[in-house]
Structure formats: structure tokens, C-alpha cells
Amino acid sequence: MADRFYSVVRGEQLPVQVTEGAATSGEAIELRVNDTVYTQRLDVILGLQAILAYLQTRETTPIA
Image 1 (cartoon, rainbow, N blue to C red):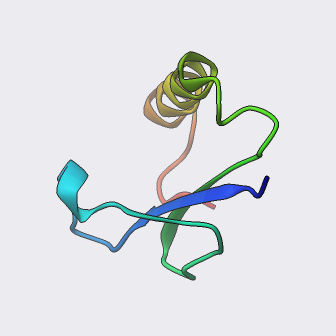
Image 2 (cartoon, helix red, strand yellow):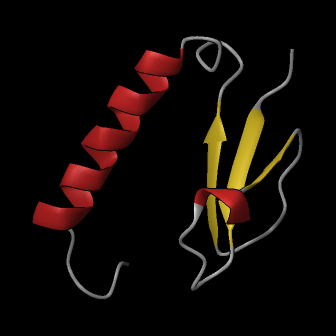
């Protein structure tokens, strides 16, 4: 199995605008999910929620 990559370009906000692939797209906003976990959808969702909460509460602006 290979890692999965999910990406959007700046300004895209809809699920239909997400690109999914087996290799990096090189977009500015990209998520790599290791092949050891992406089969467990809930684990990925919980991890994303933790990252989102971190960005909303602790990360400085602009993101460094």
C-alpha cells in the first residue's frame, strides 16, 4: 500500500475540490496520510480534528 495525499489550492473550500492521489501534488495545502492508518477512517478524522483545534487555538498568525 502507498500513502494517500489530499490537497486543495488556496481558496478552495468544498469537498468536491479536494484532490486525492497516491503522490504529492505540490499544492500549498496538502495532507499526507500514512498507509498504516488511512484504512482506519475514524483515526484519520480524529487526528485532523486535533490538528484543526491546534491551528485554531495555539498557532500564531501567519503560520510559520
